[in-house]
Length: 127
Picture 1 (spheres, helix red, strand yellow):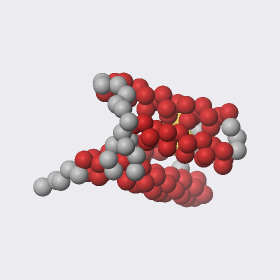
Picture 2 (cartoon, helix red, strand yellow):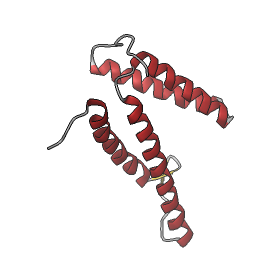
Picture 3 (cartoon, one colour):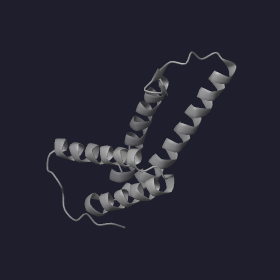
Picture 4 (cartoon, one colour):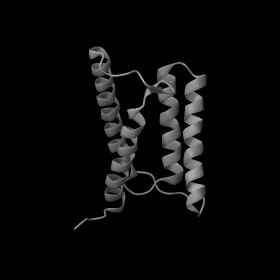
């Protein structure tokens, strides 16, 4: 699909800083642009540009898997949250407007995506 053009940064700290910077750029764009389709198009363009510069073999599999797992976790978390609030058994504790348990759920999601991603990208076989 995409070939790796060059390696940007030889140190893990540089790679992490670049990824975090791109994440903050995407968050900034979502705050200044209110049209959802334009936000989606911008994010897709940024992802394609990132893949064009820094693609590693089979990373598209990780991207597809992460999209599916992320959607499923958001949907399930939202469904549970609404079920709890509908029955009024959940105290409305929030962290910046989101349920307190949602970051924990996403934390596990990242661990799961990383483990599966390692298998897909590096074709690591566990015995």
